[in-house]
Length: 510
Image (tube, rainbow, N blue to C red; front, side, top):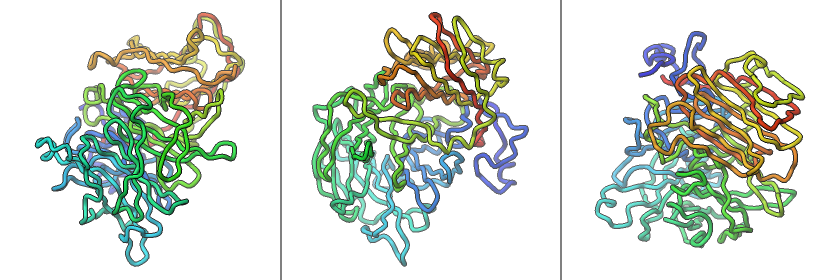
């Protein structure tokens, strides 16, 4: 075991299990443990599930193997937050049963009690998830995944599985999973967006119990390098109009290898989704934002959290007591570029709660190497860096340490692309495809370049040009990256640069 913050015995004596509330004055983080991203205290985590906001609390459920650090019998783990920044891990919400393991799904607030689960005026939270039956899988029936319900009448603390499960039997599709459900007000019905092998199938229901097939989408559209899974469908406003966005995670087949999430923008009438364009678009060009879905019941805000890993190497990354983190919560929007509507992702404003003292530099000219380490007077492992330049010229931001590890993030003018290079970032030999340079097209037509970097102990999230181009990558340096440089061989002028250390929001490694 690597360094840990505090023992379980000490924590128990404090009588609490809230991340970020113990005395951190002498605490040191477990190596690679994120300081402002959610991670389970121990064991394996993958897809976010059942994300819902109810009575002032954000609920994040997740695929969880409570006895191992690799994928295993899936449960729904559970964590809650008042602000999407400080998370408190809760008891496991859903356990496997005779119908199977608990695979991915969603949760909704059934305000009108359409399901009939509500009692004595209590509003039920209803989880819709995939049961995965390993016995039927071994029998090769092709019908081993089906959709089921559970409900909570105590604001998500405890859950009761519906006695009539499954509510949507499998019609004979090998991959039949990951229901994302939302209320469609114009037709007063629930819509389920379901991954069905290599396309999406939409179902509708008046009560979450009886489901009718509406339509299919994607048989000959989009990227098909791997299985389609973890879909999401939601509306976004732009310039007083509404468009619908369909997210589809795909594994493998991402633009930089392994897992990634594509999206489509179009119209949805309660029955069919019709895209404005069939061109493949990617929500995040990095290799470590997968299976992301949005919170339900957040009003006009649309906020997504993803799994910050990649099936290509997720079970091999060099962490000891736990595996995987979530991305930061991201607010989604639309922006029109060259007559196309593109999805934007930006960190939620609540993350500003973690801001330390900001160092601002103006009118910085870089030709060669510019050492930021001394200028900012900080060796923070977790920080936010923003910069803007009047012209898009070559430059790179280098995170480094005394072991000559380097993580390089930058812009390549010749290819009009951003990149993250982790070929020298530290431990890369655990998987042959990990140590590579990843690239992402610059999508804006503006001449001025702007970007925000969120750097945690072992991850970087790049938001460029107002969130039009996004990249998320994890990395594993031999020692903390405490050096920071800007480099440009051709020369670049930076109008303003801001460095903000971020205070820890989670107490991890318990």
